[in-house]
Length: 219
Image 1 (cartoon, helix red, strand yellow):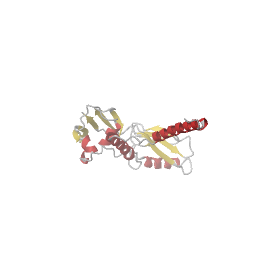
Image 2 (tube, one colour; image 1 turned 180 degrees about the vertical axis):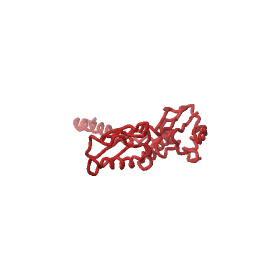
Image 3 (spheres, one colour; image 1 turned 45 degrees about the horizontal axis):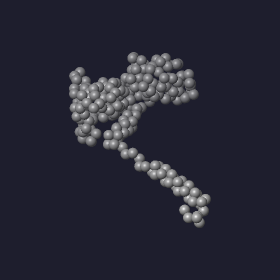
Image 4 (cartoon, rainbow, N blue to C red; image 1 turned 90 degrees about the horizontal axis):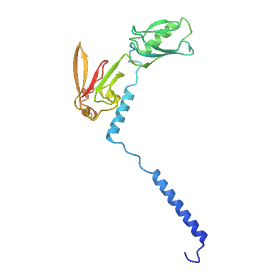
């Protein structure tokens, strides 16, 4: 530094340079590109989204069965509103109405039945029925999967959707040799399913709609 330079100006310049370097470094960190998903992560996310969107319970399609749990809501009538299980005989018990047949009806149909019965006790009852637990319709996944067991059979549920619900495969899974065991006309049939073909859009005929009691085997 020459004798003619102001020491205060030189110190100020050093501080400013350090501050600019720090600010530039933070800006670079904030502009780091987002991590890209691997093909496997994209496939898993796509399957999960498909299961969520297509697996939602559709009141117009789902038929209530024994052991399902229903939520009955009657507007402004908290004493009647409640969660009720469907008994093995297919009926539910409600205040004022006693036993009501539920099995075999859709939630919308049961809402109308309950509302009609409550008209004897209140004016224009507004009833909503929803299925909080599906226990009457189940499928099973077994073999080389992360989470084997029984799963609720959702409307229009396919083999691929059921497999995505089981948490993925183990490293030993033979993805080309998966099959579905089903009872038809009192006899067990074996339906082949090639997972690798399915995720690549091939052999859509193998990605069948599941039926209650189906067993998916991952060897």
